[in-house]
Length: 259
Ligand SMILES: Nc1ncnc2c1ncn2[C@@H]1O[C@H](COP(=O)(O)OP(=O)(O)OP(=O)(O)O)[C@@H](O)[C@H]1O
Ligand SMILES: [Mg+2]
Image (tube, rainbow, N blue to C red; front, side, top):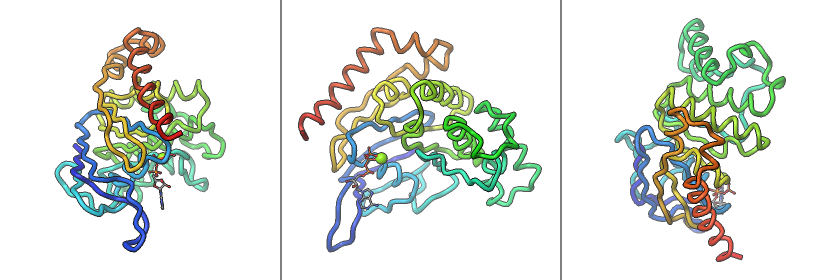
């Protein structure tokens, strides 16, 4: 579980501070897909970076499984918007890298890396160069790499933002399959309202900067997909459309307020 209690964080120095997160409190339940949605520049990436341990706290409390966050750690895996793969390593080498850094013997780390490549549907691509892969495949390698280190929480900042619409839908489904298979807790930032409503078990709507939580919704579409209902059918259900329109209305209200 990730617990943030009245966290304050931002950029700049004490003489000229910019506050991006202002006494924000949030609990990310174990096994949830907590999706952060909010206007551009409101502080979504900052919030994710705070949980990742990249952005320090100015005040408040931030914990993962009861341990205070004091910097990056193997208990939190990060999937970036651009895949951040190393071009001089092949697919298997990229996925096994965190395990290599941890000192795992070659056989063991490659076995583990192959397992997670299988989970994202890339078992046969282990020996390929990363620059030979499509954007969607590269993102899947990034997910496999983050999972290989067996983090408690997977942090994803607009992981499908750079993909075309069709690949994006496939990746949403893949993410839910991975979630169902691993039971990982996921915190995901997206700009896509439909994506947010489909993926979130817990949807967190943030205000313009400094980010405040305006609304939190519990949603059941991810669970229903994991239980076997097809994605396209779920997305066309009246209750899905109603949730999507409601969230879209809230997001657009911010745009109007700041226009
Ligand atoms: N390294 C930095 N130094 C100074 N200011 C920063 C830095 N990173 C972000 N900011 C500022 O903090 C605010 C929040 O940025 P953040 O990237 O967290 O927003 P976001 O919600 O992720 O936006 P987007 O949806 O566009 O990705 C913005 O005003 C941004 O300009
Ligand atoms: Mg961002």
